Amino acid sequence: MINTQHLLKVTAAWASIVYVICFGGVVIYPQVRQLFMRYALHVEVDMGSVITPLTFVTGLILWNIVAILAVWLFAVLFNKIRQ
Image (cartoon, rainbow, N blue to C red; front, side, top):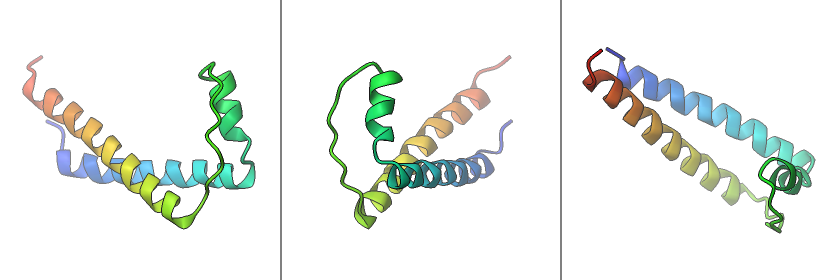
């Protein structure tokens, strides 16, 4: 059995750390967003460069929600499916 509560706390911490590092990278070198889209995803998208405290907090909340939901679903399925 996976301790779901502990796993969700660790997930929130991990997602927050990764998000802060990535956001910091975009603040330091804004072109990294377009380079990532072009070379990693093979698409040309002009996303602009709006970097404000509001976009930081909003992104942090949204990424945490997505990560927590994904890991929660994993934990539920892992605990329900028999080996």
